[in-house]
Image 1 (cartoon, rainbow, N blue to C red):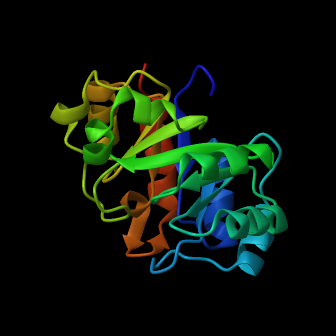
Image 2 (image 1 turned 120 degrees about the vertical axis):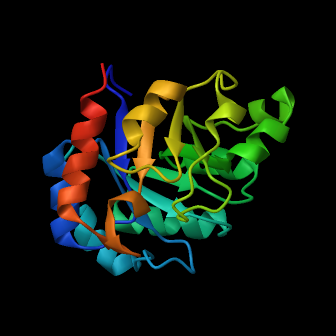
Length: 207
């Protein structure tokens, strides 16, 4: 993390949008490997896209309820730097990912996070926490009133963010970073270069 808020543009699947995110000043680009998403990419395509990512930019793979050995294998093949585990992965899965040399992001719905005890949260050896809406990629906003002031570790806000609402969301919750996917699309699963630029510009405008 830097002094600026960390920005990830997720669900990328074309060279044009990867380049746009990097040129706009995003800190990370995300590739979805979880099944059932309109943004899911193959390992072969992801490898081609990751080759466009310069040093210093995080190449993040998003996985959900996949065997950790499979996840680590794909990530190594593709050249990812970071694993975002977005399902029912165990604390030992995170340890395995970290032992394999990957930066780790634990993604969890706000409601699930608030139900956890301090001991349950402490069991996960992750680098960053990502707080999302109940249905990832749905474009729904997290209810800021439920989580404001209740997270005491480095965390990223996701879920329903757009160029139009990200400033208000960040000012209300003060996360260390933000993650956007559907909010920079022209249609479901199709990223919009202009919206990517607008999103990054909006976040960077926040003091």
